[in-house]
Length: 186
Figure (cartoon, rainbow, N blue to C red):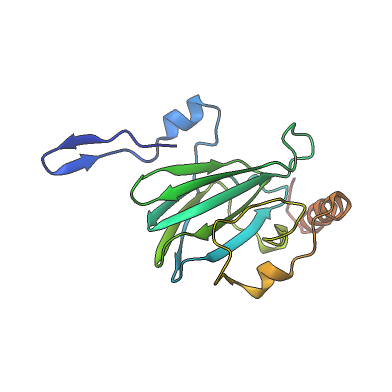
């Protein structure tokens, strides 16, 4: 997603979010949560994460300082692009953003020191619905642009290799946990 700047002698003004435009495109038009991540060093990797159903979390991600290599992977088993990934550079200089539909693994690598990333989400974070895949799992086939001096949280480096069977089990377990809570609907 790219902005349409209206320039004048002061600089420019641009809309970065519009409920009507998202709704007209058939996308979720309500964001319920916004988060920011600050990343001190170039080469930092965050990911690969998603919220399992019944969450319908979609994200709009924008780099507000520095630059990142942002990656999404389709984990919707019914999708024709299942297990394919897409990568895009987001940067404060470009003012661009990436819309990430539900059931997409998401992660990024910082391309500059002191990069900041702003996330808007369509669903509330639910730790019990969290799922992750190791950032360098060969099954994902991601080519990260920076291969030396990588900073990654141990948890993100210790996820098990992706397997369709494991993923299906995690989906079922997440649904069962939510269904077992009083007052919860799917």
